[in-house]
Length: 331
Image (cartoon, rainbow, N blue to C red; front, side, top):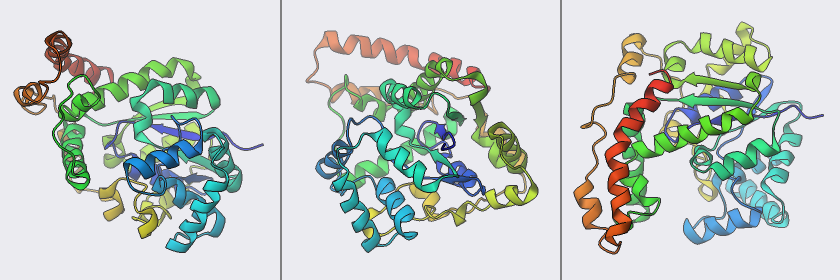
């Protein structure tokens, strides 16, 4: 019988690529890149979405994972064969696909981390329903650092994809105008789903603590996972750059983890880590989480006033909600 997987749940830009890669270096675990499977009915839906919207064959993480477990390497050729294999199994569900990956790495514990899963309750419900006995690691990062990182990431993505400023304030695009909302929505969804998880299978940690005291945090996670926490294992997890998915991958499947992590996947410890971690825990100010509301609503001329009023009221309250969530998460 296969060992239950570990799901890392966090908003985007919360150190999930770094920490999942660290955990995946434990002799008993295997951390996959971002598979981006859940939320689709069939694998063909994921493939079609990637080809139509992102001009790529499939999610890079899923292609690289198949290439790695089939051939032990990720080249243009092996990833092409992996994609062809995925086409032959395009009628599989995400659960069937993930269970295949789990079977191929058995007896290792599979680690899955796809931050966008946390932005939709339907995806989280699909995961928890399919894997009620899995372990769930809730990974947090202060909204101040997360917001700064998300702004950088979303600006880069818009330039890469040539996207224009949003004109629809009632769509999910409003989140991109105010990235702190992404942080809030993700954590709200994770906390909402957590009662469905067995208490002993749920653990919440701060990403900042992992940067400040990695050995201690890794040892605590090993004990929670009921796996070996001896020094040799801890030392292995301190080398995330040795993960087969730590780098950008071949041209045909470029990506699969956070871009900044893949460029420099080495765990960088600061001499004054205490002050570094403390800076991440600062209270957010309105100026730090500022949103250009004037531009947003000027570019939303196509929306009716009765549609915009609830959005205005929501934005007036959102800063207070973020502060409450910060406190709830222990910041």
